Image (tube, rainbow, N blue to C red; front, side, top):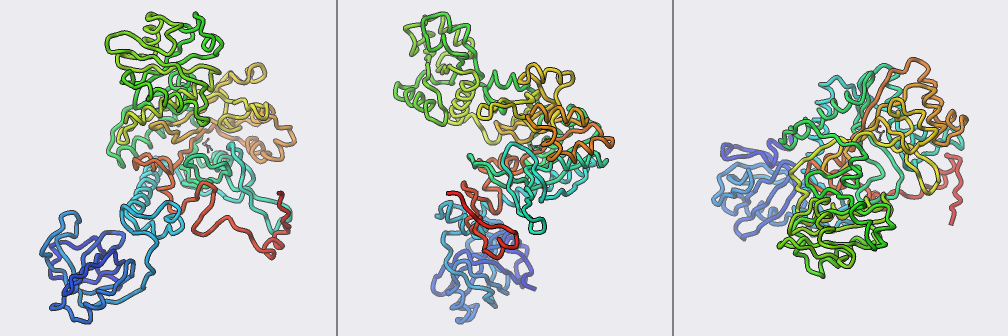
Length: 584
Ligand code: ASP
């Protein structure tokens, strides 16, 4: 038996027990006649004592020579500590060592295995197995496991069945590039790794499974913008014989359960907002509604004077920054620079200070009088002491820019409180989205999403106007889930492919299996998928999903620990019938 107790277990009630512990040496303290060792495992830290008088000199010597991260096993007796440590649960006792076995030695770790480590991100990723020994990372992984368990419990209780779907498949479009895997047995052919199990879960509905879920890896080969991972985990779900309302109900239930069980937060019915409303009010389809700063559209109030910048703009829109009237010239200039950064992309910013004495001071005083500015204040909800920031230009771009400013200011002002949770449903998404690059419409969600009833005809005349039975669940400014009611009719699905620019042959080659399945009694169905990594990070009150993934990849999609991706040798290429000819 390697151990009788864990390193987090012993208390004063265990005094006088003979115990066996095993773990890692966190640190040693050598006082000459006595040596203390902090022994660590997943469960905690227990202090060991080697004492000249009560232990043999030889054993003391061995204790003294233990290095950091050595793996040891000790037998000894639990005794009361003379100076207790109230900060740790085992702080009332220590183990007087009678026998020591070195199970493994360790090189000096490249960074300290402490909560506050001296190791930088790269180093910690390279030695992730050591990083995982640190409390913050370990706790995050345990937290993730708890969330996953709650998800499984809840959905199982609701009658959902977890079904695994294959990883070696054919492309499922979710808006990214596929990772592909060459087939040895099928010369010249490739599998794609699923961007999601979308078509499979729909086929499970055709198969009569009725309620499906899966905690599943998805793979998307996209440029890794801030905090994305090429492989990530979804809570993927699908239900048959449902309308949008049923899905929202079911998954509001799941989210409410998680907030309650994991965070102890009670929530009432989640608010709903249409996509259009979210864009007008927040310039963003995943608005953070923990704070106000709603957009005020100013076109009607600002386009009647000689200020050509506004007069030629499609949209003039502002927000009120609480307390911003006190900003210095320098601080305001810095804000203007901030919105002009390429990442935000505004050309400039007009500001209005709402002075405490009720007067206004703006950067466009030449064009607008007090009455105009008072109207802007009303439209943006600005109070005395606030600063109105106004952007203008192309409607979509301007909304995006002002939304970025809104989030930045909320962050700076401490309005994005970690322990506050504000979920909401965003509904009625557009079905299609125009892509400037390809000059074509793309499915905003995916090609299997159904349009709102009665809007199929609009597809021919005004495709951009068609709304979908699609919804997102938003939490604190993050999209944590998204889904739709699907098309379950073969002809409607063919029409949709046609509108998305597929020829009938292409649609057949890629999705023939789905359209065939729809001919065998496909039930009405719909579903949703949650991003588990993000959900866990938000519930855990942290920013990056990487911190909740045991072995994450870096921003170039590399695993720096195992050093992947990597070339394969000629023999392996040969087996795959491949020859490398890399483009320069
Ligand atoms: N497959 C979708 C996604 O990955 C989710 C869904 O429509 O259920 O976003």
